[in-house]
Structure formats: structure tokens, C-alpha cells
Length: 202
Image 1 (cartoon, rainbow, N blue to C red):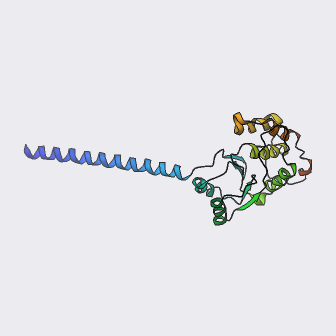
Image 2 (tube, rainbow, N blue to C red; image 1 turned 135 degrees about the vertical axis):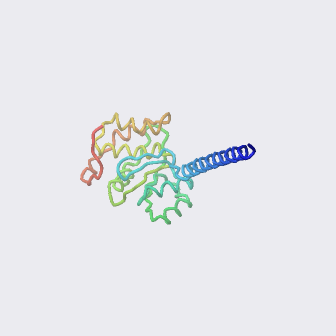
């Protein structure tokens, strides 16, 4: 009888140890998955524009591991300020080319956004040799939104769809001046350039 009781206790202990082991393994997996998610953090307002073209706000060091997964060849930076030093180092380490087309973010209505600057930036976007490519300003809303909106006009999107995409990123901070600029932007000088994108009308 005592022998049977001892065996029952041993089995119970083994079961408890197995249960503890299973719980520990489960917790370890959850921690690993959580760590992986923390490592791969996209920049604010990150999105895919088209094959090989992405948009976002200014990346910081927490976003670098995620950016490496994109295999970027180029970055278009739309601010006049010098590119942050940690970002410059990241570009050097990963062989990424920086194109800076800096212009001020304009909050006032009917302030001129430099058409020539946008046109030159679009030429870089349209050159498939620069892909994969990331376009960004500070927050990925207004300047980036204007550039992407002008690209959409080249892709023959209707203005309603162009404005709708712009507003998704700008939200409550949508600017009439930005939308007016996109509406009036002349794409005729860029139509001769090869389009590597889908030209679906939306």
C-alpha cells in the first residue's frame, strides 16, 4: 500500500514538473515573439506606395532593423534640414543612397510649393534603378503626401482618389494648399519617362 502511494506521489510530481516546463516554454515563446515585434518597428505613417516604393515619416534608430528588411537602395528626404547623423550612418552601413529635395512645410494657404523640386524628386521615384526606395519628410503627411499625390496623377488616378489617400495620412491636418498644389501640378513634362508602376485609374 505504501509503495503504491509513493508511486502515485511520484507520478503527480512528474506531471506538475511537466506542466511547469510547458508553461515555461510557452512563456519563452511569447517573450521571443514580443522581442521580434519590438525589433521590427516601422517608421510612423509607413506604407507601401507601389512595387518598390514606400513612404513614411522620418525614421529613427528604433526603425533601422525594420528598414533593413526592405532592402532599400535609395531614400528621398523632403526636408531642408541636414539628415540626422544616426540616419546617415545607417545609410552608409547599408549602401543606401540619399536624395535630398528639401523644401519648407507650408501651413499657410496658397504658399508656393516648389514644382521643380517635386518634379526632380519624381524623376528619382520613376527610375526603377533607385528601387526599392523610401520617400519621407518629418511626419510623412504633407510633403510626402504632395509627392505621392503627384505620382498618382501620373498613374492616372482621379483627383478624388488622390485627395482621399492624402487625407488618410494627413487626417485632421489636411491642408487646402497641398490639395490645390496636387490638383494644379503639371505632369506633362514627365509623361515621356518610363513608368515602372501600375497605371490603374482609381
